[in-house]
Length: 195
Ligand SMILES: Cc1cc2nc3c(=O)[nH]c(=O)nc-3n(C[C@H](O)[C@H](O)[C@H](O)COP(=O)(O)O)c2cc1C
Image 1 (cartoon, protein in one colour):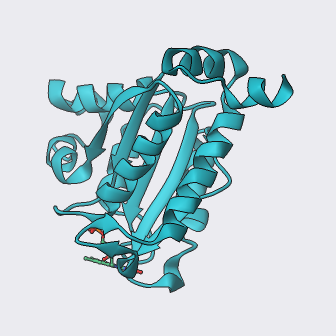
Image 2 (tube, helix red, strand yellow):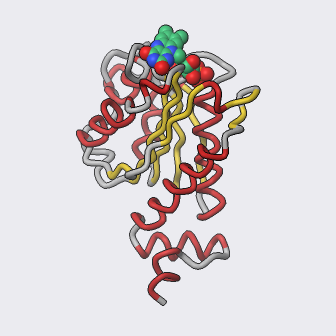
C-alpha cells in the first residue's frame, strides 16, 4: 500500500513534520507500506506557482499525483490563526475533488496552546468530509510541551498515535489488510480478531 504523509509546516525544523513522520512510522510498523512525507516548506514554493491545477508544472504535478495515488494519507498541520496553514489548503485546492474518495486518512496537528486542540475536528475533518475520504476517529494533537528538540517525548501522544493506527487497521478493506500484513509478516488485525 502507498502512504503519503503531508505536513503543513512552512518552516524547518518542524514539530508537525516530526509528528506526521512518527505516525507514518507507526503505520509502517504494522503494515507493509511504501511512501514518503511531503512537507509544505518544500512543496509550497512549487505549488504556489500554479493557482489552478491546469497551471501545474511537472514538479507540481508529481506532488499532486502522489497525493491522489495514495491509499493512506497522514495529514498534519501546525495551527496557524486557529486553522491549518494556507499552504496546506492550497495543495488540497489542486487535488481533484474525486481523487480521495474512500481513502483512509489520519489527522494530526500541533499548536502553541491546548485551547486550539479541536482544530483537526473543526477544520481538517470537514475538508476530508468534502473529499468523501474516511478520516479515522482519533485525531492527534500535540503542543510544544509534548516535544523535546522536535522529538515527541509525551507518552500520551504516542498512545493516541497507536489508537489511530489501530483504527486504521480496522478501517482497511480485509483484502488490503491481508496483503499488507502478509507482506509484513504479521496477521492482519481483523482476520486475527475473527479467527
Ligand atoms: C503565524 C503563526 C500563527 C500561529 N497561530 C496559532 C494559533 O492560532 N493557535 C495555536 O495554538 N498556535 C498557533 N501558532 C503556534 C504554532 O501552531 C506552533 O508553534 C506549532 O507547533 C508550530 O509547528 P511547526 O514546528 O511544525 O512549525 C502559530 C504560529 C505561527 C508562526
